[in-house]
Image (cartoon, rainbow, N blue to C red):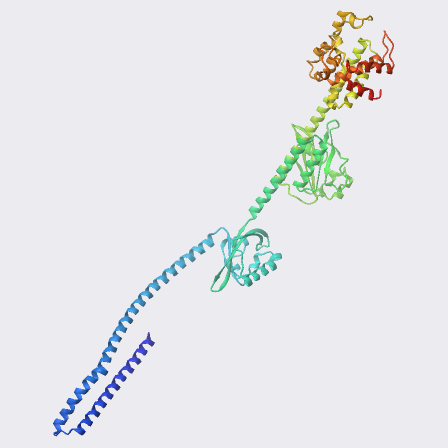
Length: 599
């Protein structure tokens, strides 16, 4: 403003000088003209000359001054007034603008102060760790959460190198990455990284970090938002362990349901125990109900066979104590209690440190003991013991199921043998009553089974074929001795009664579920291929295959044996006889197969 005033004063001085010079030049010019005029025009009288000179001077000077001095002066004054008015208007606008600008600046400053206060409040009250560093990797902001998480106060942290919260093994990599960022000015925003931080006391802990950068006064700053994820990682590990344990229990369930082989099931259980509980070895001792001793049954993870000869009384050693007291027995330092394993001289070579034994109890009965060994110290916390108890329960159930199955299998086997023995006894009794030759029923039974197997019958079918063959004449129990044992030929009435013995067999065996599938031979072995047999006059394939086979075998054995009323036929004669009846009494296919076999 001062310089513009100085310039204006200089301009006014130059303008005044120009007008003064212009007046002087006009006056000089007019006087010169008047002098020339009076030189050539001579007037007399001094007053008159003076008066005339003044009149001429005024007459000439006035329009000249008006034209070259006054009018420019008026124009300049007018222009100056206009300029001054414009300048004042501009000054007014500038003043208004300045006032508005000042107000806007003040409002902006107030807003920035409020935003800064809000931002700082957010940073300080955030539940996350917030750290800001400059381009020299020096900390310029450190909120209260960072203080409690890392252990450094704000005074200790501000101005310190950010590397103090990074584990030493990662520092070189972080420095190189930061230099690369400053060089290329590239930074991934918003992405989360799981890394490790280090506290003031040197303890490392997992953190999740998100970083971003910004420029301020041509300086680069990095903002890090960090979250302590120790609890989350612990929860993830716990969930992973629980899923692993559920999977282990599922595998054991599948092993129990898929197989009744106790040894296979115990091996699956031991595999799951060592893998899921992270123990080095495990074994299962089963309680022998006869000797009441705990005996080694299966093991995993042992270097030697140190424990394979284990035979403990109840109450003896840790395992025996677990059974007698009905509870878990854990030893955290086996070196001080190795005496309990004196039963295994090579046990010391295993190098076990920790031990745990659980009784295997199912339906209130002790089945054995589950033992777990570790070569390093492990914590037997509640989760560990709960899961081990669950595994012990599964093992007890598997042992109980296998025992029940074995008992049931033995009972079923004994029952089946009793049935077979009973059937053989019945068959022998029938032979004795009917005066059959010794071993007739057993011979025809074995021959019938051989032919039936050759003709493609299954093993399950052969079981019923064998029983039917043994009981082929069971219906004769309903025939009176006078007819059955008559030495002379039977008359027509007697034959009618004799032909009822297949029906008697049917009535006798049908109510017995166990023998119902074996009815084909006792009921149908007197049917003939051409339909002339009895009791139902079945024809061809209507006759059960087992009955068709037996009818050939029965005739072969009967004709080849001595009877009171005739001597035994030789094999050639019997063969000719059977071949002559093929297609009439006998199934031709059965006859063909019969004679291809060696008898």
